Length: 296
Image (cartoon, one colour):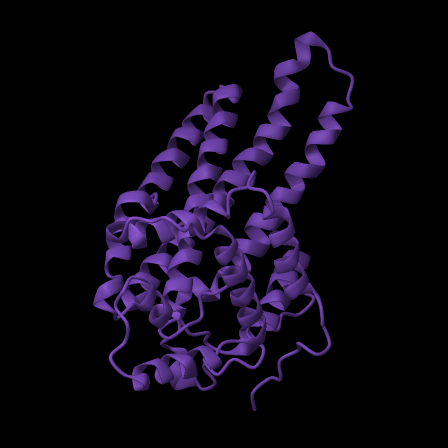
């Protein structure tokens, strides 16, 4: 959800991201990242009337990414070395798998929630794009993006295998679930970027805006983005430019752009780790200067 704050996506109140020590460490950490991303944003809702219009899938990022995903992933990460370093007897192999698979099932629950929320935000982004020239993105999304229904189906299959203690196949299904969620998150990023950069994309596919007035409106909207979000936007542009292909079929420019965008999010892609570290630097650096002021 790094870029999902333009136009119709609005945060109810920045105070939603000011958590106390009574919340988990991971929730507090994610909330701190959100504050940095939203720093100086003009799209933050600041009164109770507008707060009711805020999207719930944005507000639950702290829970889905913090308490659920990050906590469960760290628990699994700490559990695996314990089992690997234990004395393994052949007769106890199945019992030794149970603690790890218990943590894996908790991770599966977190993945399902994260994927469903991300899918809802991606779909909402695409519905918010007003340009007829970019409506094709919705069609590509419907054809290529895993649905929330597919997430539930995979999760149910995982639960069945877990209940039947078929742990090897269960672990494989969790890996499949992770791949589905990653594709959905990638689509959320694609859709948010397309919503922010609609004017630029129009030009890219050969439909230049008729006058400068519309372009100015779009730039003003981009100027309302949070400081952290703007920095990430610049990093994505730089990465996209390096991936740009010179020989592209004009009839498939939009499809090619989506494919290029998603390709640089692939783990094994050269430069992915460097890109990830730059993103991490944006959300973790400048902690004092990036603090938001609580609205009066």
